[in-house]
Each structure stands twice: as structure tokens, then as C-alpha cells.
Length: 433
Image (cartoon, rainbow, N blue to C red; front, top):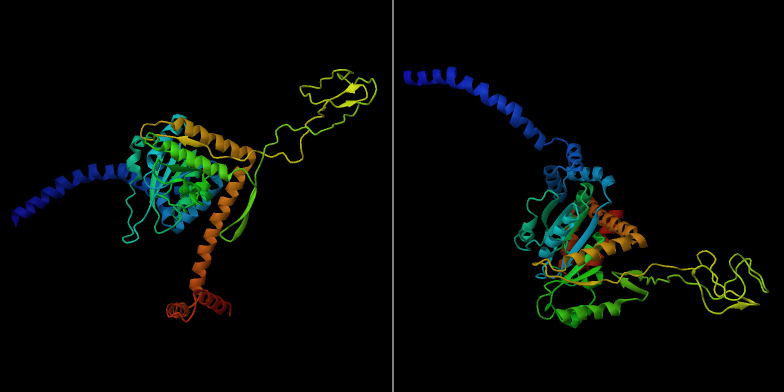
């Protein structure tokens, strides 16, 4: 007992004062400020930190957005006015075509141009366990340690179409954070996973030799959404056949004006044909008349008007040809339709990456000059609003309809005494009453 009391006195009068005089001040002035900084209490602070290029705050906000928390929604609302500047680049294609390796090389190229790059890599979730490997970043080791690159992996969580439900919202966070290029890599897609076309400004479809025959190339689906077609693994046999099949598909697709049905909606594909500098047949100019009349630099005989000379149109003794008065063109001068180029690459060696980046930049320039950039941006926001409205309306419907009514209707459908369409109409009409 005396020994225990002696030890306690030593601790009380020796060790404890030393601990209080050294460890507590260190905690108060070093650890506690770091803790308070890294764990902000308000979402407003987190959003402002993202705008100041705080990577830790960006990572935490992305988690909140992916989990669809109230704080994440509030942060998205605050960051939305700062969006609309990044180039959204979608990369899709079948499994095994080398999408991740291609994204790695593209990011390295963009970093060489001084651009900040964000990468959203979407992996499929298991339909049985719900888990996802999230292994795309394994092929992006070259980007490790680069402060100008941010890689975020995410699972589809059961969503179809090649993307996750929160992909568009997370792309907006990267946009607001000041990244110049946001690369969105989809899951290994089949023939109909085309949601990336609604999200990205430029969609890259990656093919590889030996992935299918000519029939695969002309099927409707993923190849039709391509703005740039890439034949990766071009060092393998069969690359010429793959490129030939893709060119045949492009020749079938362009350039005609078509009206078609897409998911029950009538859509029109316009063919924008460039008219160049078109002059119209006989053009009369104000001060030119018959007889021997000179107007400015126009005299009888051989007349040149600027740099424009045309056929032999004579009025009296004055040969005027086709005289341009200002900018004379046809009434409908439109920009050219974009025909997707086909680029060969070997992503593991970096071959063809510079040419692919040039094609991407050319497509972005085409979008801005033709006005399609604004059209695609509006269509993307419309699609996102529709998805959110459907989700909100379904949640409100389930909340307002008694659960017993829904279960009763489901049981009748299961017993085949009521069709799903009739059950839906019954539930909707019952809710209106």
C-alpha cells in the first residue's frame, strides 16, 4: 500500500506537471487547429475551400455528393454558379479496349499543356454483393503525386447506361473547383450504354482490333454517339479491317437530314452543309449601267472587282461578271456537319496521343463556332433536371400513397389478375381522389 501511495505521489507531483506543461500546449496549439481545419463544421466553409483548390475539402465534398446527403446538395447549389467552364470529355467503349490506359496518356498530355485535369472513373457494381473493385486507377500510376490531377473512382450502384447516378453532380464539383478538363471514363459498355453522350461535350468511343465484324460496326448504338473514334491497340493484327469497318459506318451515316424516333420521341438530325463564299448568278450593282460607264475602278472591257471574278455576264459594253456587293451569300449559310475522325493509338506506348488530343481540341473549337456547345450544355442540364424530377416525383408518390395500396396492387400484378399498366393507372387515379 505504501509503495502504491509513493508511486502515486511521484506521478502526481512529477509526471503530471510535466505532461500538462508539454503535451497539453502542443495539443492546443498544434493538433487542435489542424483538427478544426480538416473537419469544418459548415458546408459553406467546405464549398469555399473547394473554390480555393483545397484537395482535402474536394475529396470530402465528393463523398457527400455521391452519398446524396443534404450537405452535399446544399454545397452543389452554392457551387453551381461557378460551373460551365470545364471541357467534359467522355471516354467509353467495350471492356478490354484500353480505356484506362488511354485516359492516363491523355491526362499526361493535357498536363504537358498546363491544364488541370480531373478524372471520374466509373466501375460496375456487383449485382450480387453490391461491391466494386474500383481498379481503373491502377493503370494511372503515372499521374500519382501530380497536384494538377485529381482521380476519383466511383461505382455504378446499380445504375444502367454506363454511368453512376451521381456522376453528373460530381462532374459539376470538378468544374467549380477550376479543373480545365474533366475526363469521365464509363464502365465497359456494350451497344446501348449511351448516357455519356448526354453528359460530355466530346465523346470518345474506343475500339480495338478483333472486337467484332463489319455487322457490329453498322449496328445502332454506342458507335453513333462518337465525336471521335479511336482504334486503340493499333499495333495488333486486324487494325486495317477495324478502321475500314468504322469508315464504312461513317459513310452510311453522313451527310443526310433525317427524322427518326428515339425512345418514342421524334428527333431531327440536320445536315449542316457549308456553302463557302457563294455568289448568286446575275448580280447588279448600284452605279453600273449599260453603255460606256465607269464606276470607281470599273471600266469597259476587262473589269476586275476586288478579288472576285466570274463568268461572262455583259450589260451593254460593260463586262461586269459576277460583281460582289459586300458579303453576298445564299440565304442559308450553315456550318459544316462534324464527321467523327478515326485515330489510331497505342496507349501503352503513348503512340497517337498527340493526334488524338488535336482532334479533341478541333471538336471543341467546332462546338463553339457552330453554337453546338451551348446546345449540348442546355440538353445536358435538361436531362439532369428531368432525372431529378422523376426521382423527386416518385419519392413523393410513394410517400403519399398508402403502402397497403401499393402492396395490394403489386400482389394483383403478381397473380396476373391486373397488368402493370392497369395497376399504375389505378394507383395514380386513387392518389388523385
